[in-house]
Image (tube, rainbow over all chains, first blue to last red; front, side, top):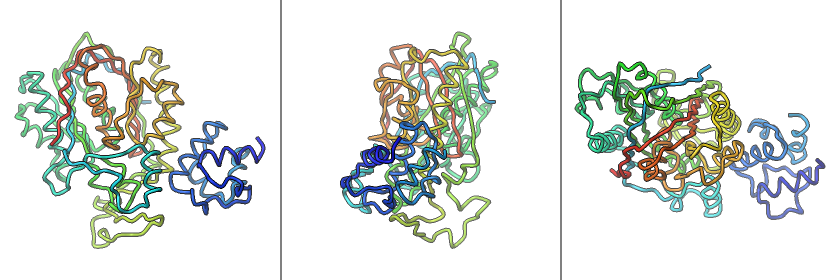
Length: 75
Length: 353
């Protein structure tokens, strides 16, 4: 999957309003929409879309959206 | 490997009791309305029944009320009850076992075996396996399984992850030795590496109560609690449940040759609506076979499954033969899945105390 497609799924899962502002370099922890619930939504998204098991630790160790995208390859 | 088949034990009745007092999540003062609305819609809890924790209503009272009502409607001779188990993390006292106190309160025989087991979310399934397990040889003919938790006791009002989630409830299940019963099938697991994911740090022997235990600590994102409150690593619990529960349910189905199409209902511990729906989709059980009561009662720990049976399956449990697949999962970390069949149970209306 391409980064751009990942970004659209990311944006849809977290219900992010300003989609155009999200790039690979976006520091997702700083987003207005980011909350403790987001961790849960992302874990479920990775499982459903990519059949990958990621942990909240994995998410904590990522800074940018591109870091999250890389998890698809590394997990 | 704890894959158990327990024969010769039937469920005869189920009763449940919640505190009358309700806390509406929409009234929560410590979050802005947008965050609160998002939380309510994702986690699925609109309100919870919670006791005031001044000793006036304890888990034992909720279980006692359930048991009294159930025994009355079953018309059981109390002298015949040979076993009482109390599964809870909110006992009346550090010691003695609340089960002993309840043996006395319920007027059971002194020949009745009684003990506590401190378990939470997996408590009903574990408790059923332990109680039925002791009965299967026929030496104990009748038993009461009491599962409950007033776990809102442990929630810091300033920690949204628990304050908006935990509800209180107690239940009683009557079990009888019955050579005609369908076997109960269980898969039971534990994972202590996740012990800190759900924990009340102080007050036990490892970190005895001290002055520091009472200090409110700030954990960021507006979360504040003391070491006497329960901490929850939501991400860790979510990961555990999302990946372990479907595997456990599938194990019960395959090991015991159960066709999932014959299941009448999937009863999931009401942990979190988003989590439960994610689990349901992974095991491919349809929505109409997966009842929820989390919106009105919150996460009631071990009582979750029996409470769900009373609130949502009250009529069908009394009139039909039901095939039920269930899973309780959480604190420990501990997980129990089971398949049981029920027939013409006695199910009193939900009691409020």
